[in-house]
Image 1 (cartoon, helix red, strand yellow):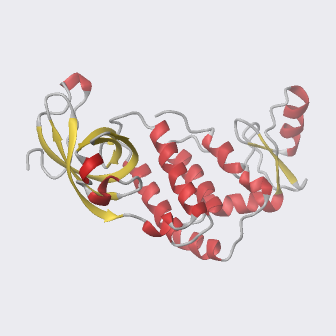
Image 2 (cartoon, rainbow, N blue to C red; image 1 turned 90 degrees about the vertical axis):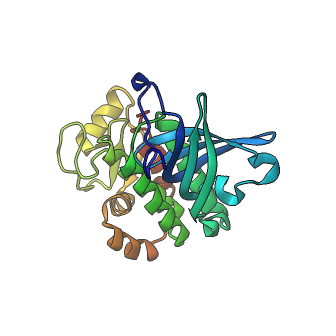
Image 3 (cartoon, rainbow, N blue to C red; image 1 turned 180 degrees about the vertical axis):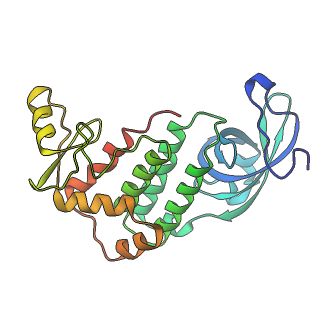
Length: 257
């Protein structure tokens, strides 16, 4: 196999991908049908997101389930003088169980969309790919989509160094203990009682407040190690309105990368 067992993407300065066959592991983020072909957005190990054409997929179902969004596998690709094409797919995981739950399916689609909108083409992000895989596995195991969304958003931001600290005030650095019963959220992070009051009075910067129980749930969802999280999540219900506002706040810290 020319190029070895992995897709070897070259930068634009190096003239692009050399003509030939390539193989790479990853997931289908998006698919757009167009006549007799499909246009895919793949998220690949070592190489980030790439756009690929799947000729013949539209009319002949040439690749079976291999071009379905959220399908993970090993993709055989061919770079011509002009475009990157799909030649074959060895499907490793389709997460078919996720597709049987409306709430789980919505969450999986959301994650694929968030990744697709925030990763620039050709930028390697293997740690994010691993996080997405683990999150999909947890989703398939029946854990709360809301708790998983909180965990995915915060851990993604943490990988990129932009996640807000969950135990200290982003303004003054004081430890947040929730003694007042409520913790203010801002566009920069959590605020202690004094800073939250000052921000609200001066500029309306606050994005709402978290009750102390919600903050504790947020911290557990985001910070617990894998095994501890799974034990905790299997015994926890996530239904309070304050927590449901947290994912959008956490995603707001993640910009195009």
